[in-house]
Image 1 (cartoon, rainbow, N blue to C red):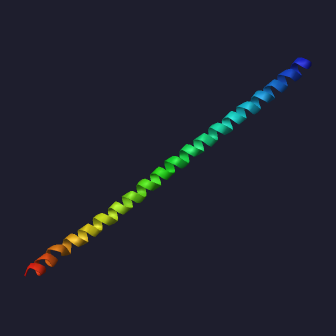
Image 2 (image 1 turned 30 degrees about the vertical axis):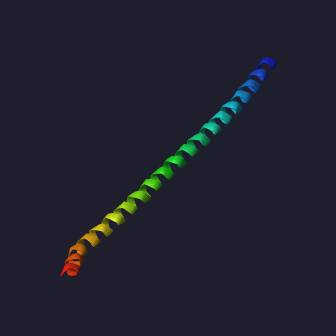
Image 3 (image 1 turned 60 degrees about the vertical axis):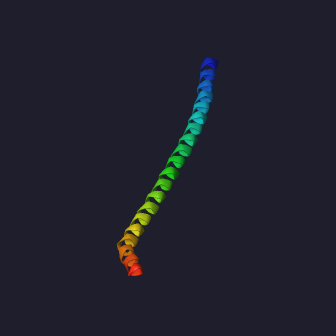
Length: 73
């Protein structure tokens, strides 16, 4: 009986240690996921700014020749 009790305590202790290691690993994975999500959010924000800047340049380019020709006339 004492051997079984010792086995049970050992399994419980290693189970707790394993759960603790797993918990640390999950925290680490959460940090990685948050970092990746923030990178994607930053890239999306830059993409959106580039789209807005490009569309603004198209609008300006559309009216720029008329403005320049009016100035030189």
